[in-house]
Image (cartoon, rainbow, N blue to C red; front, side, top):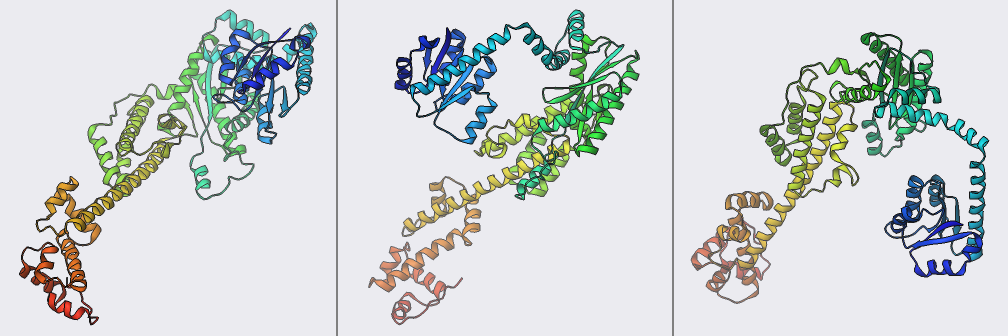
Length: 559
């Protein structure tokens, strides 16, 4: 009796499938049901079903996500997808996840029964094959390359005993007899600027060009092919893929560590040159320490990874041996308060030219003789932290600059050298400067509009003053005066007089109020001073303006 798990977010669908189909007669037991992928995953450890029948569209975890989880944790479980999405995109995902069967909605009970029986037949066939010793041996033979790769990855990942190494090396055909052993890491350099250029210009990267491909695994396999060809010409070297890099293992007959290292560096340099020649890709290699036992290769690998990190300081497209860099004297390089304040001030109120100068100062003097790669990474993270503080202070969303899925500190490790890091930080600072400037300008505009509105509502008050306006807006008079004059192109006093004179003209044209009444209505306590200001502004008295306004007289402002 095979165990079956039903997953669908509709209760009536789940109940209907359980009740309408005679599962026991088909050789199945419905061990449980779930209403979404997350609930189904939680049931797996308890039930370990042989078959899962699941809908695609579900909350929390959909059917394809559940299928991916099952393939990762329970690869032998059969998966039947129920879907109404007969589209190529879903078909592609289903193929990648190795979905066993699918049923298109709406479906009848018999259609589902036919698919379930088909899967049952597959399981029975697979079980019969597993029981056949000859089939098992053939499967083992075909699995040897995979097991060999796994063994080599284990060599550089953890400490292994001599007996374990000897047994697995013999079983998988790996030659590990030698006097010196060394691990090196080969990493394809990221191509940043070229891809960005194509995006900015709206161009597509040249088709068929590995250099502009964003498929790093494709680049990695191409590098592996070249490295394998070179290793075939040199005895004692083997190359394989581990994580997202190529790893070169040196098993050499020479005992002297310096000689073993130089032979390895020569092979790495040959690989580097051929990768550029045939693939137009650059790569950086880090070579670790020489050890006397294969069981110590994991330590050599760690040193190789540290050597690779030095590309940040030394630059990429080269071979770096840890023996050349770790003996250098290291001095502390600090991002002190003075440097931090200079960068913050520049981002807030500086110019692009000033920013370029400050970044040049921050990045100048970072040399291998001065600091270790770890110190350099900490120094760069301190600069990045300063930038993020400014962004937070001004409510700038970090996702806008780094992307929703990006982790800013991890981005540093993707760059090949300090020049690229400087360019990246410079572009972010420029965007941040522009965002802050736009926000500041928006604040200026709103401040001035609020002031103008207050003046329009209170110009008739004779005691209105710049101090009262600033008190209302909660800002200093000096700050307000400079902003107001810059935005309005006249001083506060002139703008207030302008509003009052316009209101006076309107009253003179449309009412028969006396001059002293109009003067009081627009904020003048002294009618004579009102008449003086009116004549100074327009060149005529209020009475002359009233008499001439009906005749179409045009009044010119006097500044």
